[in-house]
Length: 198
Image (cartoon, rainbow, N blue to C red; front, top):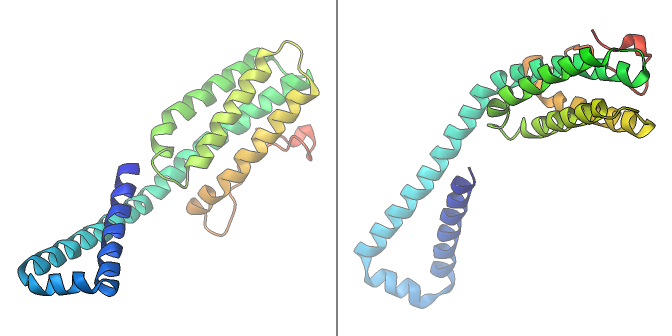
């Protein structure tokens, strides 16, 4: 992807440079007029490069649009498991849930994130969501690894959940335009514990 972007910028810079020379340098204009075949060939090549650039960008946009719903569906599956895992970890931190069940939910979540990475990494729209999902996985794993949870542990988990929920909004709207799918997101800060997901 970075090589493609660099190539686009190189073509744009080349075209801009030729235009500037043609408009500002009289000697360049005289030279090009004296070499019509070379000038015509170079102009045709530049037009071809610009055309390839435009076509490549259109194809990339269509590919991303076609993949958007698949990416959104994958993100929704990850989010649903994030709800279950986060809820289970929150219960452990509250002292009211079994650590073994929470560990199993977190393992399932991490597996789903790992499997979904190849899909979620393919589009710029889903990369922030993937980063947030990975960060949430790290926070849940760290929370379960601590024998004695602290208020800071719960605070970090709250923040990771809030970030993932925020990053999920654009992806949810692809599957459900104009609405927000109800996945039972836990509300660690503002909602009662009994409202916390499945």
